[in-house]
Length: 251
Image (cartoon, rainbow, N blue to C red; front, side, top):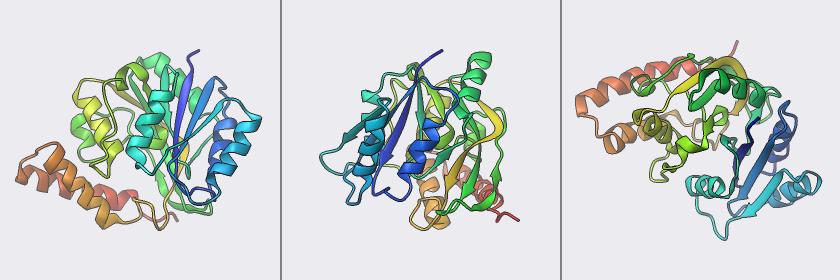
């Protein structure tokens, strides 16, 4: 079975990173490495990761000399990794125990380049915040313009597919831009409807501020994709409607 490299950028994550790493260590699939890079944290993030790494040699810990941002930190982590498959998990999110096992099985069955899944949305204390985001089993470039099926914390992508691409720091939705680029280039994506990850949404996270998220999406349409104004407006309206439904409060 192939080795998986788990990419984990970290910045001032002392409240959550311990649980995040533990959610990887609890995976039912064990052939992986965790590449953690501290991007200039001012809290106890480094000490927590170093403590975890001391008891499990699958955890590889690095520090940036200065804060370089999440995109360049992820790019650096990928360059330091060795897995055939690349997975991403930010330092405040969580995986369910069977995440890697199910996704590798789906990858083998489908031969897709990108595997993604449904995910739950929780607050900083782990309480359910919104209804679970249940993905479609198939997506493509056109569908992704309106509804981003591919949550970064759920992605498992072939190293060979991502080799010629990088996260682009000039866009706040750098992961979304990357998935669009891969799909536009002909790479394929398959989704698992089962919830396999938990995404934290709380003040300070990019997804919490919906107005800013909408502005960032607009910039992707106009500056990255060079979409015409009318098409951008229509697509933006569809995106807003989908987003309002996505973040509907859980009952």
